Length: 355
Image (tube, rainbow, N blue to C red; front, side):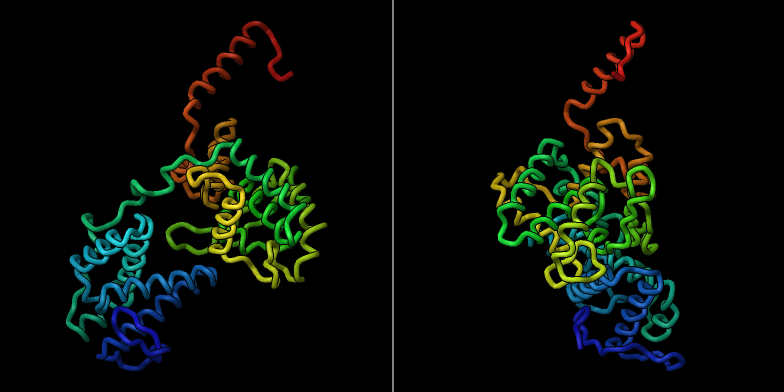
């Protein structure tokens, strides 16, 4: 048994055709089970489902009552308690969003049963006053991503560490993994779900990575995409497959751990933190796996890659989403101006700017 929303939940759901239980303990469990089943039907990955189940349980436990009894004041209390506890804006937003999604499910699937059984007409308690902002003032997304020089410096450190690390294979895997996160602009979870057959070196001029479990928009399920192996990533991945992967346990997982299983996205985040601690840079110069993804967007944009191409690279539905990732350097305007002026003057003088 588990506890959700202060209620002791009984494993399993109601059998089709059975009358609705008037016991809120049982009925809420049936609703949670059905909600989770809808995630599986939409093709959510097992890792995502496990994470979201835990988040939903924590949210309902904090609210302390059945979902159909939650008021706007209950939402205010939970979000306020999280803020007092020092939880980030993104975490507070996740609590609100998971409850909002569950409540929406109840409205669509269970409203009539809840009203007839418990006498409650469902009205979502999340409103304009307690809905968390999409990006808060304390969000890491507002911080500039690492510069190209900083990223190169980190990769140089990882490359040098391969020769001195106690275990060659994990150190070399780390180098290939974080190079992939940066050059391909992948999310941590996307990289953890890659398998060896997902690498297609003969596809296109650079080779491509088949990201089969790309994040979908608005809970639409996985959205596959093809990502080119840019900036020498094809050479890194060929080396990894030929020289490094055979030294790890046999499995289909690309970036396997020392048991052959997939690295969890939390493990990737912790691994990066550990490596940067070894590198010895101050905390202000450290970054997250997601910052590497934003760096991919920013650095490609700064060197003139079309915004629509970056959108496809990252797997965003809209260009506006991509623009939130792009944080050009403080001299971006001046640099762009110099390039434009140089190109214009060269054209007027008849010089060849490509040489």
